[in-house]
Length: 343
Ligand code: XUL
Ligand code: MN
Image 1 (cartoon, rainbow, N blue to C red):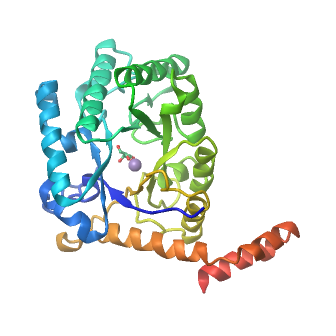
Image 2 (image 1 turned 180 degrees about the vertical axis):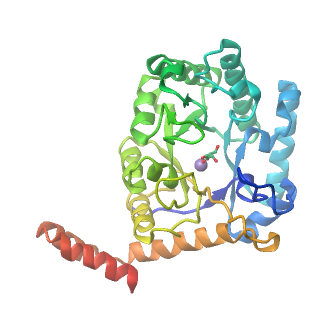
């Protein structure tokens, strides 16, 4: 079954270019300016951090947050855009310095859970049922600072509270092995799927595979996708690319390793990704050197590369692939794939 592809990205993927060593180099764009660009760039879906949707939400009441999110929904409707997910931003507030759900400080854990419930309210107001948890600071700088068994129990407990808070919400974990932490508690798809099984409603806990995060874990992103697909838990993806084991680069999809990108597209298409409404999210960043007026090319290029690889995946001689697999002639299979990509 072939997939159906609709593309999404988050407002943070059009950005000012600040990095840990230097300030912003491009002027910032208001959300309204960004929303005007989505369709022109070939995108129909918008991913949100909770405070992308409702800025300054810590200073608003739950009712005010819902009202603002409803206004945003009208704006999205006017643009013909759909929201894809909401992700609570649990890594900037001072109460999340040592993590949210796994913080050693109960008041901070309570804040994280409360903020997650507000993010669920925003998702509801936007008419969607998907919450993404990138567990940014749920890990350690030094091994002795947190108890890793307790951390898993606290993560499970927090997710259970979210599932109880809203009987429809689905929680999608985005694993990443490191950065900003030295070690994260949920570094891979396997950990995320296992965590889901500990929760009160495992069918409502799934996975968002990000290419760069899998690569940082030393894994092949398409294998991580296959693992999540085998559990019916691949609910969204963050496609991008990464040049080896260093900081999270969020490079344009396929820009480093075309074959690795091809295999991601191939497994998605083989298993009908998108047929149940899943989006192709592109979590890519523009290079800092890019000037303002050409600072969205990473998005259009990533989408274009996906579609080109889709053509290549669909035109691969699958009978020949089967024949070579049956004959265990993997050298020739290697050559077939390379010739196809190089043609
Ligand atoms: C962090 C990352 C985030 C999440 C959304 O590495 O990928 O952008 O995707 O919170
Ligand atoms: Mn991501």
